Amino acid sequence: QVQLVESGGGLVQAGASPRLSCVLSGRTFSYYAMGWFRQTPGKDRQFVAAIKWTGDIQYADSVKGRFTISRDNAKSTVYLQMNNLKPEDTANYYCGASNRQGWSPSYPSWYLYWGPGTQVTVST
Image (spheres, rainbow, N blue to C red):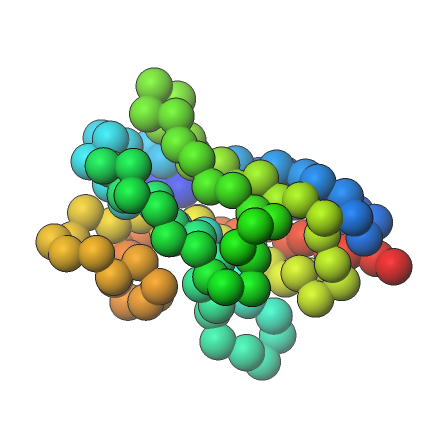
């Protein structure tokens, strides 16, 4: 059974630098591209960052320079290091996994599996 589990969210102050983690089980992690998305109530899921099995990386413009995605294949884990958080970064953060052909990481439909999400709330 495939399972994705995110962790590392919580209530943080503006300017904080938390790191989110997402563990994939039930599949061979190194074969999957991994992505991070975020969502606020009433809005569509928004692309944040993605990393391919080759190491190719893509970021949303809104987080470029502040967030860093990385992966540890030995631990079946993808990370999202978030620096200098702003109140507008408040959202539920989800990780997704895909082994589809091509590279369309900013589209939620490209992903096969999703975790339940972890809430990040940034206070001023």
